[in-house]
Length: 120
Image 1 (tube, rainbow, N blue to C red):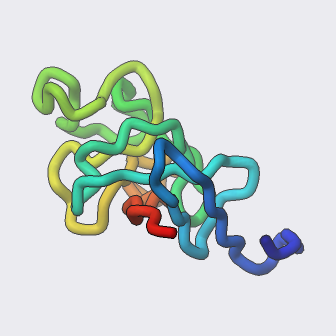
Image 2: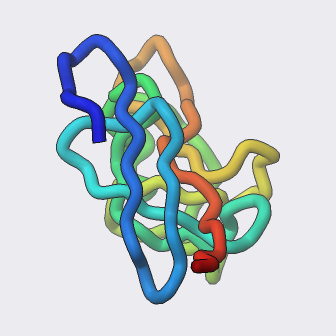
Image 3: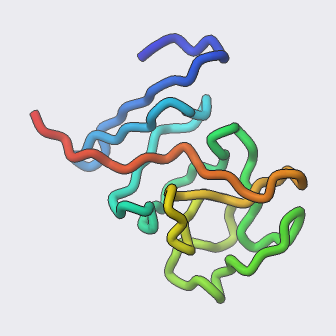
């Protein structure tokens, strides 16, 4: 793994349940690499809570700073709840995302990648 100079993206790799997970450049420092298996990331249930640009995610139950209808009631069984972890409740084409806590930026995608099956 390359040294983190704070300027260049870092690539993380971890072994997770027999699969090699890659978080491609845009890593958020201080967060473990996590991945998903569904092509759109609908199955992602990890704890990444920052976007690809390092913005903090808004809690899914909060309506500030961004009002929305992506709620547990409207999107059951999609992993939404009393947390601010990245999810993909509405099948967004680029995978897990979240509303940001920045009033100027409504949402961003998250630094979570698809799992790649490990072969030796």
